[in-house]
Image 1 (cartoon, rainbow, N blue to C red):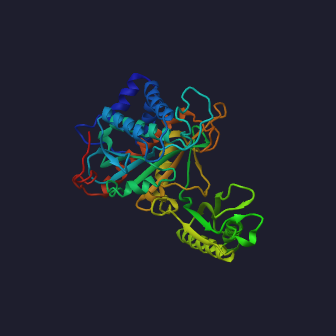
Image 2: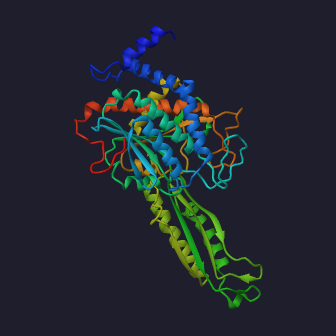
Image 3: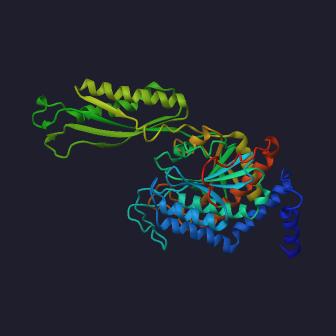
Length: 448
């Protein structure tokens, strides 16, 4: 592209200080913006900056609500960009603010926490913390969202309304999204987008689906109390192992015998603990697992029947059972339902960004994501950025100790975040009347 063409593009898109923001509603204008964002994100210096951020986070993974180093890195980069933010939100979370502080209000989200896994990939930037690894790509999510922050800061005059950048702690089993929403700083959202990397989608492709995408989910644990003693004298004891075994087998019949075969539901027991010696019947046995459904009613039905089945099977074997769903710490995850209108908007932007046929349709899965708490409150969407590259062996599934990332996907994620944010706010600016400071937290301390 010649210098004259570049100057013309810059003038047509960004020299708007004296005349108000450019209109982006037409496809040619959005195409020019999207391609400019992608080329900027692919700039070697810009790409190295994003990649280095990701590698620094990858080397020092932190578990849920322990993301102090990661949170500090995020705040340092926001400070350097001159972007205001609120911290702490849900202990280690950060919410940054761009735009006018008026309606409409759109958000982009990245989760920050790692997993309790030992990384088995040997490379220069392998995790330096034993037993902890970024095996779900959250380090890449932070890097791409900071990349979007930088792209958008350079084009802040295109932001019509307010944009919030959500750096969320504790996604991996801690319901961090739920706790961020308790703060109030995100009460005014009109919509929110979360980008997730996925190794079964090839680099250079995007994927998502409208409507239900991921299951609602809960966890449970059960303690079966018996009476221990010598294994040679079972008639003098009350065996909790037999009771627990019977309960575990009976749980499988909830899905196979009690629910419509056309409704997707899962009950899985993931661990069992009881006894340490071959000739001793233990006092108690503990087991636990997860349950999933693609409907709220189905989730509540499973929760009710799990409790009943375990307690009744324990009683049959003369034991007592205590069933705990841990909702004081981890609330039931709602079904993750992608907003259909937002899906069509982001799909359109994705195809403009990468070309026709580059946005794939994801199948529904019984996985879960705490982003569903956002979906319960406002128009929400998860979009996937592909990272599969057979040469790099970046095909291992999420949560694998062999998980690896094709970093060439980062510019796509950063550009998609940015293009969607500008496009969404432009499309909705005329629908909302100006509301002074609506997008910024009232009575809270913003840093910037």
